[in-house]
Length: 131
Image 1: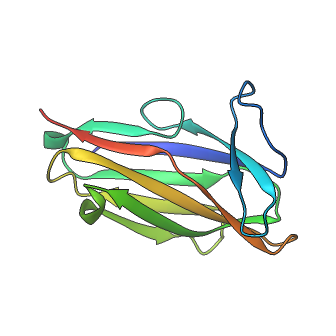
Image 2: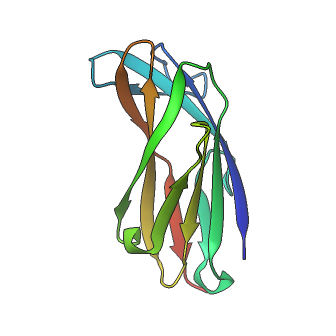
């Protein structure tokens, strides 16, 4: 059973892309940026062999206290294989990938900025590759 650790850092400023951060728009129109580390690619993405069995991805938020993980949304052709459990602390979540077939998917971590009262999404890929 493969396990992956992913860290997410978010900031309340736009990125030019050269600093390793990705810009995203919030529900209030403000621009935020985020950066993932960890996973199998070093940038929050996870790729594994479909025969490896169920995988666990632990996402940890390493940012200012104003930010909290409030949801994780899945998309792609493997989204039915993905489930999530949000930590009661607001700074962690666990994603389980049953890894029962090949395909590509995304997990979008939804962050709430409690100071600005808005939300924004941060989304790296998950790929279940063939044996």
